[in-house]
Each structure stands twice: as structure tokens, then as C-alpha cells.
Amino acid sequence: MAVLRRGTAPEAHVPVLIIGAGACGLIAALAARDAGTEVLVLERDPVPSGSTSLSAGYIPACDTRWQRAAEAADDVDRMLADIQGKNHGEGDPVLGRAVCEASGPTLEWLADSHGQSFILETAFRYPGHSAYRMHAHPEKTGAALVGSLAAAAARAGVDIICDATVRDLIADDGGRILGVVMTRPDGTTDEVGCDALVLACNGYGGNPGMLRTFIPEMADALYFGHAGNQGDAVTWGTDLGAAVAQMGSYQGHGSVAHPHGVLISWAIMMEGGIQVNTDGRRFSNEHAGYSEQALKVLAQPGQIAWNVYDRRLHDLAMGHEDYRRANAMGAIREVPDIASLAKLIGCPQAPLADTLRGSADAASGKAADPFGREFTTASALDAPPYYAVRVTGALFHTQGGLAIDTAARVLTATGVPLPNLFAGGGAAVGLSGTGVEGYLSGNGLLTAVTLGRIAGEGAARLAKGTLRKEIGA
Image (cartoon, rainbow, N blue to C red; front, side):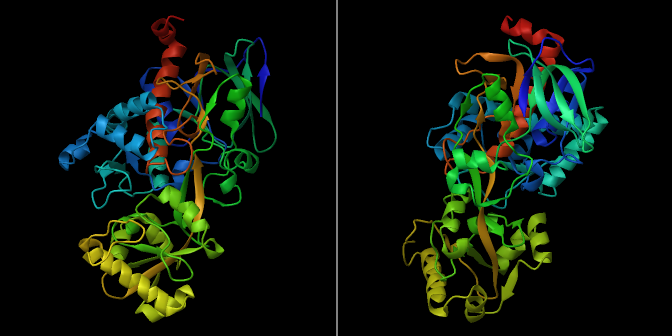
């Protein structure tokens, strides 16, 4: 992967070119089409997918009509405060505010202009969110979200070429992107020129070398992201003189069924479930956040934990497609009593019984939780049968990336925008601060969705010449 310096553009040409057909790229394409420009999306996979397809598909947004219908009070200031609170003030508040302001209008635009269906999750709140603001496709999976967006792109006349891996960018000596070089599965290459380029090709979670450099603690962990996330955007951007930011930031997850490789909804933990290690003991405050829980699970014997819960929570989780799939695969185990649960986990019965009793005491107010978790009477585990699933911690996606402004333009180290390069989603710096603890649930899709629209609109205006007038270029 490199930037080729040339003075002329490829003969084949499209006004707006987008690399990546996940949520960010597809939404950028829809925005560019709505702005009146032709657009081409290049996707390395046989079908549009990306990291979005592996996620639960929840998009945080504020002041939406779905929230108003549910009487779920929320606004930009409240949402931004939650994001900045989780990242300990390490995120860029200017970019954060721009993203929060764009979140509600973007979802309503997708619904009204492109037939997207969303529901508001009100059964539980993810860690760190002070309001019900998680919106999802009715199937509650990222794969369903991507499929729906791809169908909308087809209806809008967006051209998508799959099985097309972009190898190199072509730029002039001033850093203006002239086009790209892409390869096909049979080894043939093609060149396509453009007026503006949007990098929507996510981060570097699939690149072991970059992980060892920027996130060494997760270099050998299970990677639950897209294998195509090789850090191409960072490589190309830095070759062009772009700055990068917060490269050690990432989203982990402490609840991936092992060895089945299926995400188990954290709603189970938020509504009363607990995690125990193979000694039958809890080891953390499960409400702190599922991202940082990845490291806590990986620190346990064998890098394994067990989610333990009751029928009430099993029934709640059955509302999620991923959980139903895990159940069908046999990852979810039902046992009649504590003795059977201890046998399943492979731990002595006494410490496990103590753990369950301690959780019940915390829920009833008889004792404080030693890890600081705030149990409630409503979240106490009911009587047997118990349910359990063996899980491990995993890296989901990186949150560091190319520095951008609020128009999603890629910036140099001096803060000057590159002439015609935009980035969103995992290709750009996120809102999660510097490590794993700053990730607020949904931050990844939040920036993918909002910055996708912002980047697509900006690229279209630049291609039509109107953006140059707006910025005085």
C-alpha cells in the first residue's frame, strides 16, 4: 500500500470515490448521491460488510423522534457529557459536539429519504449512557443494518464494485488525490480517478504489526473485527502528510462466546447478570463498561470467564439475534442448581455459592458490593434454573486514526486540510480518548454513521466546486 506521485489522473473518472462499503461508506455514498453527484464505492469483500456487520448494530443518537415518542429526554449537551465523561475528557469536544449534533438528523434523514427502519432500545441502558439513545435496525444486528443500507444504495443508483482491493492512492505533489489503483481477485489492476476521496475503510485491528506498536496489550487477543482492517487509511494518510491521533484507543469486549465466536449482549450484565472466573468468583464491576472488561476477562485464568444469569435475563437476551444464534449453537447452557453450575464451570461449589449469595446480598441492600457495582432489588438473580455461557475478551476495533476536522477533512500535523481527502468511521480518530476505558457503547457506529454523511456531503460539494467557494479555496 503506497501513495504514487503523478501529475495526471487516470482516464476513468468519477466525481466522488469511496473506499469501504460498511456503514460509513454506504452512508457517505447516499449523502453524495443526495447532493447530486455520481459516486463509486470500492469494497474488498464479495459483498458489503465491514466491521459494522460484526457489531450489534446499535447507533447512539440524541433528540430523535423515536426518543420523543418514548418520552426519553435527551439532547446534545447530555450526550456529549456522557461521551466526555467516559473518555475522561480526552476526546476532542469540538468534534464530539459536531457528531452529537449530527446524530439525530442523520438517522431521521436515513429513515425519511432512504427507507431505513430504526427502533429505540428501552429495555436497558448500556454503561455510561444517562438516557435511552441506542437506535437499531429492528433485527438488532449490524449485518441487518449493512444489508438495509446496501439495498438503499442500490435504490439510489450508487455503483458498488466488490472484490476490489484498493492497493495504492495516486496523488500529485501537492497532496491532491487524483485516483486509486485497485486489484481484482485474478490479479488484474484498474485505475479510477476522482475529484474527492472518502476513506471509509476502518482501522488497523487486523494488522498485528500495528497492534504491537500501538496497542501491545491486545496484540495476541482474539480479534473480533473485520480481517480487512489493515490500517490502510493510516498508511496512505501519513504518506500524504496527514496527522494521526489517539492511536492507542480501541474498543474491546468482555463477552464473546468461546469457542463459538458469537457476541453475547451486555444487556445481561446491565440487568443483573454476573461474570465469574473458573474459580467461581467475581472479579470486577461488570457495570464499568464492556470495553474495559475485555482486559479484565483476559487477566483471568485461561483468559476465560462465565456469564451467569437466570431465566428472566435469558428471555431478555433472546430478543437479540446474536444471542439466539449462540443459543442455537449450544453456547448457552441451562443448569438446574448451583451444584450443576459449578460442575459446568469446573470450579468448587462453595466459592460459587458464596459469589451468588454475595450478589444477592448486594441486591437486597444487606451488603455493599466489593467491586462498587450498584445492584438493585429488581436486578437480583431469581431462583434456578441458571444459565451460563463461557466467554473470553476480544478486540473489536481501533478508535485511533487520521486527524480530521468537523467537516471530516483529513488534516496535516499543522491542522491544514489535505486538498480533497475525507475520512470517517474507523479510518478517522474517534471519540474514545487514549485507551480502552474511554469507549462509550456505540462510539464506533456513532462516528461511522455521522461522519459518513458529513464526509459524503463534503466530498460532493468539493467535486461540484461549491466547497472550494465555502472555504475560500
